[in-house]
Length: 364
Image (cartoon, rainbow, N blue to C red; front, side, top):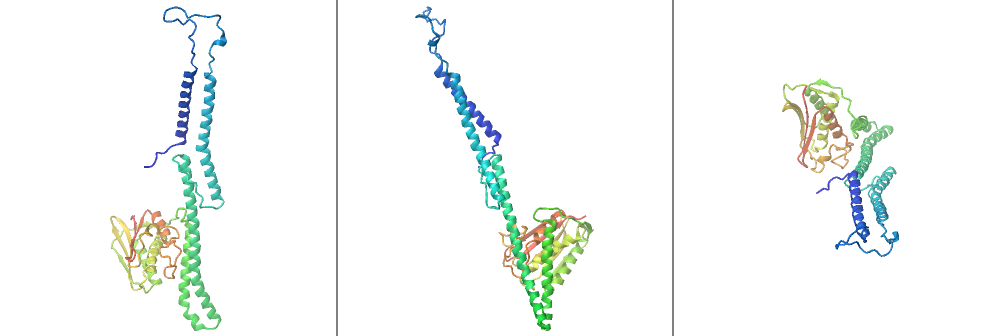
């Protein structure tokens, strides 16, 4: 069971209460041991006669009351102990937080405060640790982006370079034969550059708002445009387009929203190795909302990878083959675009069982 949250104020109040209790006990003890032993002047014995008095009473014969000095001394001791405890509770964790912040500032993102406290300082320490973890993840994502971009650029650039070498050698027939692959390579380069520029423009890692140019758009026009683009890029892939009749219009940015459907279709193509395996694109009205569905029978997504598919630069298939290339920005952008339109995106899949992606948005 988690311990209750303790504030610094409650800690200081508890410390002050403990000090007051100790001072009270000390005062009682001092009073007990320093109380006067002689009877006061005018005290009578039980027989009713005055106590005998031998000679003149001298002030030096009276017991000295050392209670106040002892109380003051004990108070100083208690306050000193309280100051030491306060320094231990406050100064040490603050110094640890300061050293952790300095280490992070110097570039050591593995530094953690690891404060095991349930007060404001403990909360601050956990926030600093979370910040360091997030910075470490951002840098890891950037390194992953550089690795992905470098890999994706290397293959098409190498093919283009080979074709240019063949042309320079005068082998025109072989150079012309490679023009088809060069056009595919150039298209892939455009997609990669477009994804990176879009990520920078929309700042997908930091949640910047998307600039939407909304208009009342027919869902079937978006689906038809995406299907046409898919068939043009991959003519060998069977694509089934199913559009329900009498669909209401949706208030979306048609360019950005079509990009979502394009990305889902492209992912289905990439992760369906059998070229003759069909992909389904369906648009229907479900529970009063317009639903776009993309269904394939590809390799699917592992259960452990499903929670991460929307993370920036995440790639479920890590072999970096030509067929499954990309920089890991597609689903991140798709999710942000759909949510910016007030819609939802859901991907269900299992390894070896294909993938189903659903985008739902409200009609006008």
